[in-house]
Length: 220
Image 1 (spheres, rainbow, N blue to C red):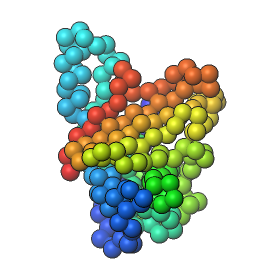
Image 2: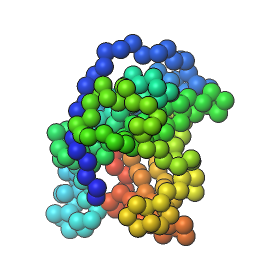
Image 3: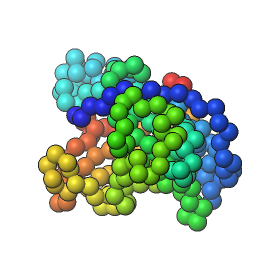
């Protein structure tokens, strides 16, 4: 797994631009409040490790302990509504294994919120929120068209998907084309995260342990 250096997270006390109260059925302010925060799957890891000790699953099915931190950032040059996210292993102060800039774009016509996500280009870690706030499009590594997550209202929460076949990326390691799929969920208490890759003929390339979503509880 590719490792990245730790990102410093700070809260920027800048008034946010006004946003609509809802987008054709989505309570946008509620969605944004649920999207931000800190989440971890410590309880899931504890269950997995107990199941492993009991011989009910194998080592490959044990989920790593992930801590997700998602903070809103005022970055006007990027457009949309910007959040900065990172995933660390073994707790909030652990090693960072992913960092992304997320731009949320409400789509009133279709009644969804589209989440575009980006890697960072040309920055040495630690990256501060001030640096993110000053970024423009040239500072980000975009994913191909069709790789955005589409969020919809779902009962007490929201579901986000990348539909199979919509997102095609070329692996930097193998050079093969992969189809990226994702199924995400947000509730008042937490989140689920399932992301995977398939070959063009449908064979799995990567996915979560045991093909089971990460089940994250909100901790802040």
